[in-house]
Structure formats: C-alpha cells, structure tokens
Image 1 (cartoon, rainbow over the protein chains, first blue to last red):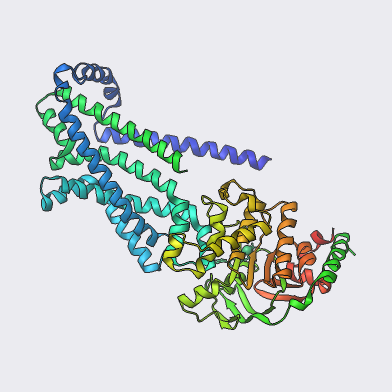
Image 2 (cartoon, helix red, strand yellow):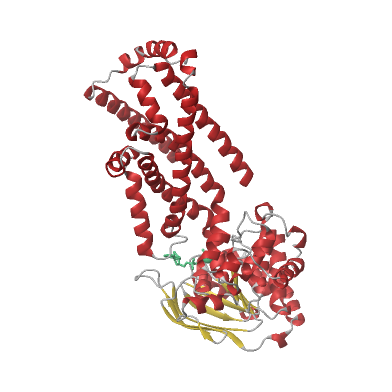
Length: 263
Length: 279
Ligand SMILES: Nc1ncnc2c1ncn2[C@@H]1O[C@H](COP(=O)(O)OP(=O)(O)OP(=O)(O)O)[C@@H](O)[C@H]1O
Ligand SMILES: [Mg+2]
C-alpha cells in the first residue's frame, strides 16, 4: 500500500518535471527565434478582421468559380491517381517487408529501406527535384505525390498486415496453401478495411499536398492560388481555400461511408 | 489419493472399454533425436523421440515454456528443427523442398488456441481454406472449389453441429463455435494427423468438453491421429490413449494415463506445482 503511494508520488514529481522542462524549452526556443507569444496572440483579432474583410469571396470573384472548379477537379484526379497507384506499389512492398508475409529477410530489409528513403524526403523536396527532370507539368506533381505516398503507405500497410493477419497466415500456411493463396484469401480480406482507411487518409492528405506541389510545378489548384495571390486578388484566394476545405470534408465523408460499407 | 484424480480415472476407464483399438495400426509419425534452439545458447527441444500410431490420441503436457508448441510446429515444419529426423507418412519432413512440403502439410491438419480463422470471411469460406493444399494457386485465389469439396465442407460442418452457421461471418461466432470451424477446416484437408495447440485454453468448461469430445471422436471413428498440447492434466488423463510429459524441452514421461503417477506429474511440472494438483 505504502509502496503504491510512493509510486504515485514519484509519478507526480516526474510529471511536474516534464512540464517544467517543456515550458523551459518553449520559452528558450521562442527567445532564440525572436518569436513572441504575447505579440502573436495579440495579433489574432486583427488577423481575423483582415480575413473576414478580404478573404470572403464576393460576386466578382464568383466569376472565377468555373475556373477554380476545373482546376480543383484536376487536383482531385491527380491526388486520387497518385494515391491509388502508390497504394498498389505499396501493397507489394509491404507484403515483402512485413514479418508475417516476407519472402526472405534480405528482401524484407530492402523493401523497408526503400520505403523509408521515399518517406523521409518531404513532398516539397521531391517536387523541387523532379521539376528539374520533368519540367513544370502535371507529371512532376504526380511523381512527387506518388513517392511520398508510396513511402508512407508501405509502412502503414506493413503495420496493418502484421496486426490483422499473423494468426490466419499461420493457419493458411499450415494447410499447405501457396504464397498467393495465403495473401489473397487471408491477408487481404483481413487487412482490407484498415488499408482502405489509409488510402482515403492519403487521398485527403494529397489534395492538400497537391495544392502545395502545384504551386511549385505550376499546375492545378496550387497554380491558380499562386496567380491570384500574386495579383492581390484575395477574394479568389479565399474562394479557392473554401473549395479545398469543402472537398476535403466531402472526401472524409465518403471515406467513412465506404469504410462502413466494407467493414 | 487425491479426489479429482480418482474421479477422472473412472471417466477414463469408460473410454478405454468403449474404444475401438482395432483401428490403431501402423506408425504414422516417427520423431527421432529432435533438437531445436532459437539461439545458440538454449535448447528448446532436446533429443525428443516420439512415435505415433494411426488413430492414436496422444496428449503432450508440460509447464509453460517447456517447448510444447515448438515441438508441434516442428512436425509440420512451421518451425524448422535444428537437427533430427521427422518421418511422417513414410516421408522425411526435414529435408523436403517447398512443393513437397506443401503436399505433406495438406495431410496434416492444425488447430490453434486462438482459432486463427480469417475473421472477416464466412464459416464456409474458412472451412474450404483447408483445401488449398490440394489446389493450384489460381484455383485457390479465385476460390474455385468443386461440388465435392463444397459437399465435404458442409458434411463436416454438419458433423460438428455448425451447418446452420455456414454463411455467418466468423467474427460473429462464440469461441467454442470458432474452434469447431477451426476443426472443420482441418478435417476438410482429409488429414492423417491432427495437431492441436492448446485447443481449449481459451474456452469455458462446457465448450472445452464439446471440443475435446469431437477430437476424441475424430481419432476413434475417422482413424485420424490426434496430437494435442494441453495444460490441463485432468483433461489429458480423461481423453488420451497416451500421454507425453515435456519439461525444459525433454520428454520426461511417456505412457498410458493409468501410469501417470503423482511422482511423474512432479517430474513434468516441477515440485512447486505439486500442491496445486494435490489440493
Ligand atoms: N520464435 C521464438 N524465438 C525465440 N524463442 C522462442 C520462440 N518461440 C518460443 N521460444 C522459446 O522457446 C521456449 C519454448 O516455447 P514454446 O512456445 O514451445 O513453449 P510451450 O510449452 O508451448 O509454452 P506455453 O504452454 O506457454 O504455450 C520458450 O522458452 C520460449 O521463450
Ligand atoms: Mg504453447
């Protein structure tokens, strides 16, 4: 009993220490970067007023709506295309990299290493590098999104496979099933809902990333955003932002529906 | 004499008299000089010798970590033994290539503590998975099963009292029902040997009895050899033709249940467990 109390006390002291250290780090870093919280917070009301007056699209910017929607569609297609193709590649690498379904150890390490490299290069860096070889077009955007999505999904899929199907894989292997029988009738049925979840998560992420990538590659909604931003046409910028938000919410809605359907 | 044990022994003798000994015949599985170590320092299995006859019901008992699961999985090469010989149905298992291993595995059914079903598929689909060892990759991937195979699956489900659940998804079943699906999947393989790794460890007493009765029935009426890992001594005494006691990777007891003395139980489980059994 006494020991228990001691443990609780110790935990409390540890927690306090951790909080103190975090506070110190925050103060220290904001001093180093000359970022003042007080100033930052003080400027919030002003920012909101500015946004309300400048970013709410008026009748004039509404004329741009068809153009915005066309570019938005382009961005959605790019995002869906890059995500789904990356998912297929990622599934293949995840099967090789998972400890449950690996073919052999060297290939498992290889697959995880490749995925890790692709994952740890940010999408912006990919876009900047690829723009050199592919130029300012949609292909650059596609590959930039493809690579980061691939890297991320391999990892997510490996975890999904290991979590969902270790036991059924063991049983199928014991019956004398072949590798592909085991994958298609065991691993995929068990992991499908979680994998589809990740797929929608990445489509959603990629629509936002596509906007950023488009800014760099001069395509899609990001390009449009850039143009109007530089023209100081903030109302259209606001319109674009609202459209992106609506699409992302819609995709989340669809994702939930689909997940419930296949679960 | 401890009360529990005397009671169980009466049950057991009933089984003995009703048993059809005539079915037990040739040696189906012969394990010789089997060693297994996961790392160089510790031997998980040491010099294991074991022979199973056709239609025999044999239990392996032993404390946690004794190597029961490892021994079972060495037999169908889910785990590769370090050295030794495993002769199953006239074929040396330890040197098989992939394709031959596959056709040998098809003849060995396996039943697991956690049932290991594909939970999002139906009972019927899971049972048919037992046929994969006999089918080409494409037939398996596309779930192309013959009418006979489907009939066999339904017959087996019927025998286990699970026919009405055939089209239910496995994640909607109780533990005892899931385990019966697990057994059905193993039986659809038309196996010669059934390996059961603690088949009742996650079940309540009633379901446990149902499962053990089915396993016993399988060995008696179908002539299938059943090898079961158990951690309940009383269950092993009640159902087994023969008991193998494993301790720290070595066989320390082997014989008919009647001969399993308290001394032997102490050898298997170590002295600290003794009080538990005698109370
Ligand atoms: N994959 C593995 N890698 C390393 N060591 C292992 C592995 N699997 C089992 N072991 C070790 O081998 C020993 C025997 O394990 P095993 O699972 O065969 O025991 P068991 O008799 O089935 O025990 P339990 O009754 O708890 O299931 C244990 O000491 C365990 O830690
Ligand atoms: Mg075990």
